[in-house]
Image (cartoon, helix red, strand yellow):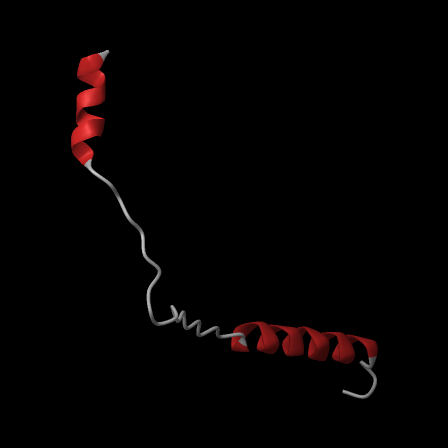
Length: 54
């Protein structure tokens, strides 16, 4: 049992400090594809509903 405790005793102390500057995470999200898809779907529905106009 003492042999198992030796590595922990030799490991030392671990300290964790917070950074002085804030962590910045920049997320660039492209939603253009979804908007175009929704517009295309709405346009398709409008054409189907008003087939006599087109």
